[in-house]
Image 1 (cartoon, helix red, strand yellow):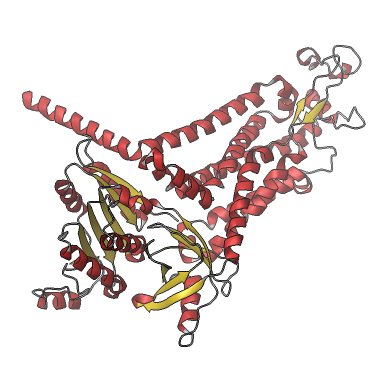
Image 2: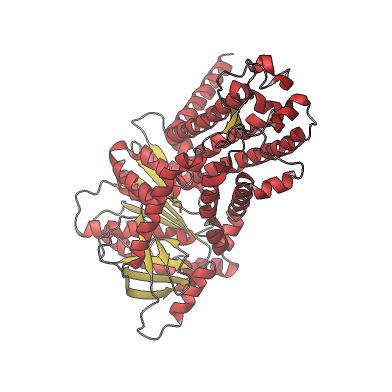
Length: 582
């Protein structure tokens, strides 16, 4: 019995510890998500009840029934989310906020690194609410038509037959004004219907082209279709101008609905029942979206100004595995470690901008990017550079940025774990170079005590362009008696038997046969439980920042390990997960 009690006590303690660790890593993100979802639910419920129970819509519901609140409640949620959708992609705004949140701690800044995740969540909500709104309004048009044709009883028919009672104002209720107006004709000949079709088609194209498989393999398709947002927002602003949904107005004398609804034949004949008058609501969508639209317009204006600024080449190098290194110089350009820029090559496309993490250090008088051949744009750029004459300048390049990322915070942690997969090593090249300069200048502001660096690659020659930097750092840390400062492990995840045999033959060599480093290359993938356990044991009272630039599957795994190995006790080891997002 005692053993069972002890076991259950340990189990409950473990569960509480896991929950505490989860709150440490995800608490604020979950809170923001709950607040966002709460606002969506509140808006939906509030406007559903407003249109379902509001006395000014009593006669409107007589024509449309339950479809009225089911159309209007999603519209309110759409207004709110269309206000939000542009903000997460205003990168200059995010960089400004990141700088202003320095005093607010790393937890607040981490939320800015999830901008694209939030952008997608908002997009999913817009898609869902658009579907509900569209279906409900299609039913509304059908029921408007049926009411005009007298299929829903005398009250609905009389309401549909009301004409304008004022010369300068439209006071009718049913926008269907003729038996020849079919639902299809109404949809394609009214402002609300036509803009609704355009908005929906633009949204479908944007969402379908944003799927991972299309975005990765056909980036140009994603890029161009995503710019349909201009048409989407233009249609959105004018969508409510048709004023299709109409509410009853106050008349003098007032129209008593409960008394008059059973005797429409007496409307306008007795004082208690003057002819009811209706009006469409004032369009409100533009008031929700005008602010974000102005902010985004300023973003694009700033991009155009940066596009016009001259950029020159310091050096162009074709690295192994078709990786292009560009060393660029731009007047007044300042960067931080781990930041990224958008590049535009007018010779390939004047409209396309592609993000690349900078591999140079802030201490250098140039900035560099490493570009791997994936997709049409990068292939064209590499071919263009390969065909340059000896000593020739590269094609004109425009640069927008730099923009902040999670890696900017790497030096705010006592201990940092850097995990790169393939070309995902680029932000950490910037960090490691900066560390070398800080060593060289004996920078007293360097707070980081230890760095663990992991690089996973499929091909052996992918290591070559980065091995030189690691060799320099390896030598520098040894000379300064700081051998434990940098622990790095390289993993070859794709190999054949000849690689293994070659490694076995030369196993007793002092340096690795692939990289020339003292640290030998590992074959296979890391055992992350073992790695986190080691970091925890070697740093028993440190805050560890775990930084990843790599695939989503690896991100999920590392995020779970950060939660698993974080200690609830504030005096012991804690792991904070950070991921690069573009």
